[in-house]
Image 1 (cartoon, rainbow, N blue to C red):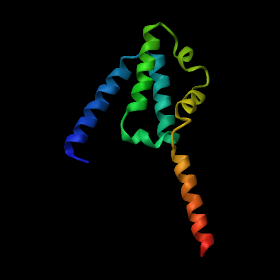
Image 2 (image 1 turned 60 degrees about the vertical axis):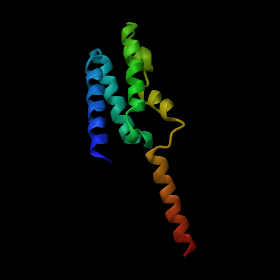
Image 3 (image 1 turned 30 degrees about the vertical axis):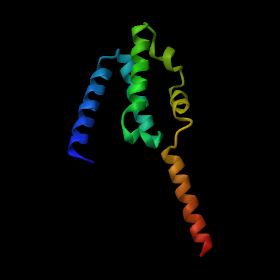
Image 4 (image 1 turned 60 degrees about the horizontal axis):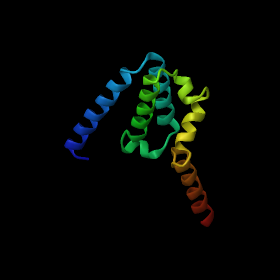
Amino acid sequence: MSIKKIIEGKKEWRAHVSRVKALPQEYQIVYKEIQKYLFKVGPVELNEGIGLLSEILSFFEEGAAAGKGVLEVTGTDVAAFCDALIEDSKTYADLYQELVSQKVDKAMKK
Protein backbone atom coordinates (compact mmCIF):
# COMPACT_ATOMS: atom_id res chain seq x y z
CA MET A 1 0.00 0.00 0.00
CA SER A 2 1.36 3.38 -0.94
CA ILE A 3 1.90 6.21 1.50
CA LYS A 4 -0.60 8.30 -0.46
CA LYS A 5 -3.30 5.65 0.01
CA ILE A 6 -2.55 5.40 3.73
CA ILE A 7 -2.83 9.18 4.15
CA GLU A 8 -6.07 9.29 2.14
CA GLY A 9 -7.47 6.45 4.23
CA LYS A 10 -6.63 8.26 7.46
CA LYS A 11 -8.27 11.46 6.20
CA GLU A 12 -11.36 9.52 5.21
CA TRP A 13 -11.48 7.82 8.62
CA ARG A 14 -11.08 11.13 10.50
CA ALA A 15 -13.93 12.67 8.50
CA HIS A 16 -16.03 9.59 9.27
CA VAL A 17 -15.31 9.85 13.00
CA SER A 18 -16.28 13.55 12.93
CA ARG A 19 -19.63 12.61 11.41
CA VAL A 20 -20.16 10.00 14.14
CA LYS A 21 -19.41 12.59 16.84
CA ALA A 22 -22.04 14.88 15.31
CA LEU A 23 -24.78 12.29 15.89
CA PRO A 24 -27.05 12.44 18.95
CA GLN A 25 -25.58 10.56 21.93
CA GLU A 26 -27.89 7.53 21.65
CA TYR A 27 -26.94 7.11 18.00
CA GLN A 28 -23.24 7.35 18.86
CA ILE A 29 -23.57 4.62 21.47
CA VAL A 30 -25.36 2.23 19.12
CA TYR A 31 -23.04 3.07 16.22
CA LYS A 32 -19.97 2.26 18.32
CA GLU A 33 -21.48 -1.07 19.40
CA ILE A 34 -22.30 -1.91 15.78
CA GLN A 35 -18.76 -1.03 14.80
CA LYS A 36 -17.33 -3.32 17.50
CA TYR A 37 -19.68 -6.11 16.47
CA LEU A 38 -18.77 -5.83 12.80
CA PHE A 39 -15.05 -5.70 13.53
CA LYS A 40 -15.34 -8.94 15.53
CA VAL A 41 -17.68 -11.01 13.37
CA GLY A 42 -18.28 -8.89 10.35
CA PRO A 43 -17.53 -9.09 6.71
CA VAL A 44 -14.03 -9.53 5.38
CA GLU A 45 -14.51 -6.62 2.98
CA LEU A 46 -14.80 -4.28 5.97
CA ASN A 47 -11.00 -4.15 5.83
CA GLU A 48 -11.17 -2.75 2.30
CA GLY A 49 -12.61 0.61 3.33
CA ILE A 50 -15.38 2.13 5.35
CA GLY A 51 -18.16 1.58 2.82
CA LEU A 52 -20.53 -0.38 5.06
CA LEU A 53 -19.80 1.78 8.10
CA SER A 54 -20.37 4.90 6.01
CA GLU A 55 -23.70 3.53 4.80
CA ILE A 56 -24.77 2.82 8.39
CA LEU A 57 -23.68 6.31 9.40
CA SER A 58 -25.72 7.89 6.58
CA PHE A 59 -28.71 5.78 7.63
CA PHE A 60 -28.28 7.02 11.21
CA GLU A 61 -27.93 10.63 10.08
CA GLU A 62 -31.21 10.34 8.18
CA GLY A 63 -32.95 8.79 11.20
CA ALA A 64 -31.65 11.48 13.53
CA ALA A 65 -32.68 14.23 11.08
CA ALA A 66 -36.19 12.73 10.99
CA GLY A 67 -36.33 12.88 14.79
CA LYS A 68 -36.45 9.10 15.22
CA GLY A 69 -34.86 7.29 18.14
CA VAL A 70 -31.98 5.02 17.23
CA LEU A 71 -33.86 1.85 18.15
CA GLU A 72 -36.69 2.94 15.87
CA VAL A 73 -34.12 2.87 13.09
CA THR A 74 -32.33 -0.38 13.96
CA GLY A 75 -35.00 -2.25 15.87
CA THR A 76 -34.46 -3.40 19.44
CA ASP A 77 -32.18 -6.30 18.47
CA VAL A 78 -29.12 -4.44 17.22
CA ALA A 79 -27.12 -7.65 16.65
CA ALA A 80 -29.90 -8.95 14.38
CA PHE A 81 -29.77 -5.62 12.53
CA CYS A 82 -26.03 -6.16 11.98
CA ASP A 83 -26.50 -9.76 10.92
CA ALA A 84 -29.08 -8.69 8.33
CA LEU A 85 -26.60 -6.18 6.91
CA ILE A 86 -23.90 -8.80 6.40
CA GLU A 87 -25.97 -11.89 5.63
CA ASP A 88 -24.69 -12.14 2.04
CA SER A 89 -21.09 -11.21 2.88
CA LYS A 90 -18.18 -13.52 3.58
CA THR A 91 -17.25 -13.25 7.26
CA TYR A 92 -14.17 -14.19 9.24
CA ALA A 93 -16.12 -17.16 10.58
CA ASP A 94 -16.65 -18.33 7.00
CA LEU A 95 -12.93 -18.04 6.29
CA TYR A 96 -12.09 -19.97 9.44
CA GLN A 97 -14.58 -22.71 8.57
CA GLU A 98 -13.03 -23.03 5.11
CA LEU A 99 -9.56 -23.21 6.62
CA VAL A 100 -10.60 -25.94 9.04
CA SER A 101 -12.20 -27.93 6.22
CA GLN A 102 -9.09 -27.58 4.07
CA LYS A 103 -6.82 -28.72 6.90
CA VAL A 104 -9.01 -31.73 7.66
CA ASP A 105 -9.22 -32.66 3.97
CA LYS A 106 -5.46 -32.38 3.62
CA ALA A 107 -4.84 -34.44 6.76
CA MET A 108 -7.27 -37.15 5.65
CA LYS A 109 -5.54 -37.51 2.27
CA LYS A 110 -2.22 -38.42 3.93
